[in-house]
Length: 266
Image (cartoon, rainbow, N blue to C red):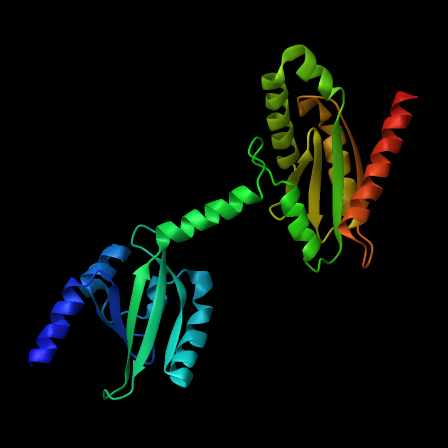
């Protein structure tokens, strides 16, 4: 009884997040710190399945987690949960199966690492984002190059006489043009397509799973809505060939851009 009393005080006053659940994933107890992290009352959670506090797209992983607990009698990792206000919570957990209890149950101990996790995400995001236009940067392109990409396409863009804006109107006006041009490019894209600032006044639109039809459609869209852009521009496009390096695909799009610019100026 004394040890049970000590355990109860530890459970209630621990800064760590403690909970227990059945082998089927039903929550049987949860301490105040864990309740506070989720913004839910203890009684609201007890008797609920773990799936009730998981994001819908994470629920499929619950079966794998329970199977691992059953097989290895423990599991560690980071679990994404949903608080009462719909916000994300990230718990670094180490859960152990108590096989001496009847019936056996899982004792979970975790730390709320939400702030740390979101800061790391922001740092990763900053590393692949252009600070001025907020579109992706060359580092993102390097990441793409390391992936085993299926067919993809790109449109490359150069701004016409951009240097003159910087020279005559100043860099603040030049920056404003770049921001507006990035927004113009993004406004015509589907969800999985992305704008990348290659540097200076050079931009690239990345189109995963590109078809010739989609590339022609995008080219025509930018051409037909050119008056919405803050500056005149030139463009060229290419679709990747099997086993072609990312840089080679972009070079082919560049060549088309230069050819088009030469034709327009001749």
